[in-house]
Length: 83
Length: 261
Image 1 (cartoon, rainbow over the protein chains, first blue to last red):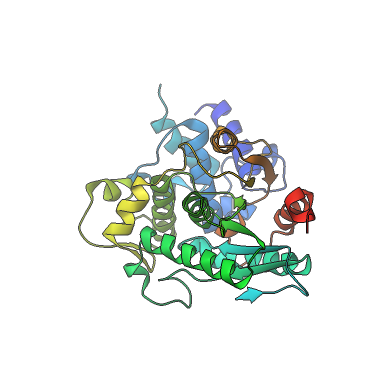
Image 2 (cartoon, chains in turn yellow, purple):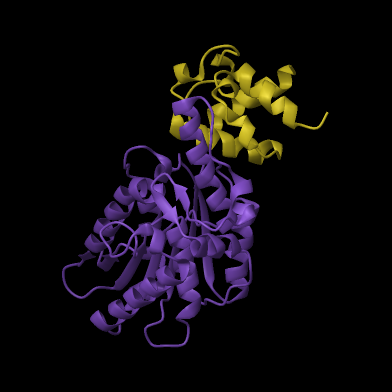
């Protein structure tokens, strides 16, 4: 999966969710809840992803497996982005 | 609830609250703003729209038309209660949208609002409804592993029954009204307008710029500001947003209209 996409996602997470850490502090495979990301944050994250990448999260994307880590989000988002 | 200042008010302001889950979390910030504005000399009326909070009717019976009527009645009340006092509307999220709609309707009478404060207004009803559905889908996902509610597809099919946004029933009429609602069109309100964008961005979005421009074309004096803050109306617990209040009070104090008394 593109490292650029993961880097971009981490930047989005930090900025959109006001995490107060550097994007590089977020590990690709670490559970997002370790960074204080909760149900409220997820709505902001989804809206942020849709705005930034011009995609629309479909009903089937709302699966917990798609939101556990940066890797998971990047995989899900990668399927939505044009090749 | 009327927050009255000591002595004659310089301004009589109606507060318009957000809809759905946003109302609960946005409440504290609006109360705080009303109290601080009262200390600064403004009479501030906060009310629950029908179907919301302590007001009559269930949420499933509410409509945008009904909420417009509620806001209009409250404006008339303020005009009668404080004759000769400048009237203003302050709204948060969909409440800001309702305030903007009401300002268009009360143009030609003596009790017309002259001041409009819009905190992160909902510009498109369809997008707002889609976000509330996403909120519900995310909650389902966190509880059950995946969402069972349909998202945008559910809005588009126009199913006959009410839409359940986690306890906030949205009637087919309200859904239809929100799907048709859009602030991105020419405005006719002419007065003082303050648009406060509250988001993760510290620059004004094109959509807010366009809204500001439409007000300017109508002859309004407009200030728009970007406040980089987490959207407090989406938090689990009610939180305050003192900076939003600071910016609003600072703008109000700058208005010649309020200095002339």
